Image (cartoon, rainbow, N blue to C red; front, side, top):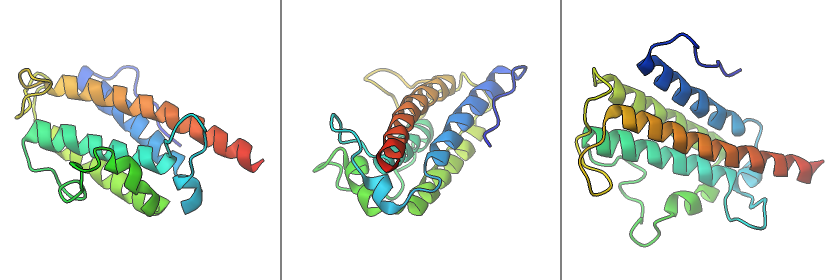
Length: 169
């Protein structure tokens, strides 16, 4: 069961708890899924898959916390991914991954993100690399953006799980 964020927490704890809340909901989406279900295109209007969204969220975590915040080289599997040839490789390649592999990847990446953020004392601290053609964003901005990104895709995951449930009923 996912623990809802503490209503009396300070700002940083609130941001961390909301992001972790949505991260856990993403992981919960993979519970009980077989490989075929995670890779299935469940809605005719989109090519999104449950596995593709989870792998994309793992990539976005590393982009913002490793590459942008820390200024570190992008880790695997992204470092060797053919992103120049296929910018949506994270979405497309997920069909080759089992739900257990996707869960392990996402959990590991989220833990790496937590460690990266823990190295910054203040939410106003700036990332090592600039973003969007401007200056470096703050840790606060990264937290808010990652809550936005994760929650948005969590909604997509809910929709896909509903479609999967209706297909198998």
